[in-house]
Length: 70
Image (cartoon, rainbow, N blue to C red):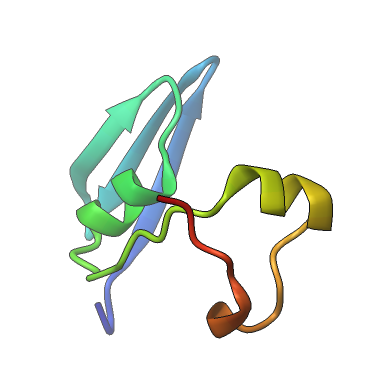
């Protein structure tokens, strides 16, 4: 989205996301996927093994080192 202007409008517990002056998403909170979808950015979702993540405490620097869940 080169050259796009993104604006967040915050009001109490409500969030609005405007792209180039037009409402693209709104809700009590916006997830990363809400924002990426509104910006027309392609992305992948990788489910992680939650026990592995809990044991490690954080994600590794390299995506290839992520232990995926089933």
